[in-house]
Length: 117
Image (cartoon, rainbow, N blue to C red):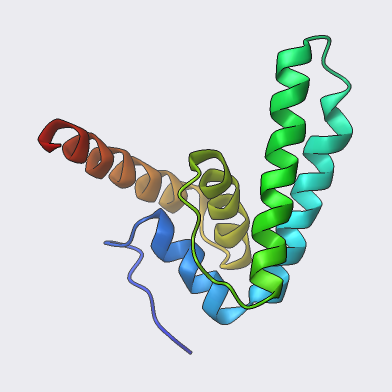
């Protein structure tokens, strides 16, 4: 089994690790999450929020479908990455505190990239 150093890894590393270890389980979780977003989209009274939820559900389904076809490319879409990280972290039994550490580290990296770019 491939190892991952949670003390230094980023969001993409956690997603990529799940794609290597259990791509079908990750795709299944992404599809489930997509269904949840789609089902609750009409619960909102705001058309823009509803449209965003449906769009996110479609993008999650697209990532799950790509994974099922062997495309293990982690998407650049921030919303999809956030949801995929949550699913991957759950599959890896990653403690919520460590999830927060990883996402905070990622935020710092992104802030540095914005400042230098």
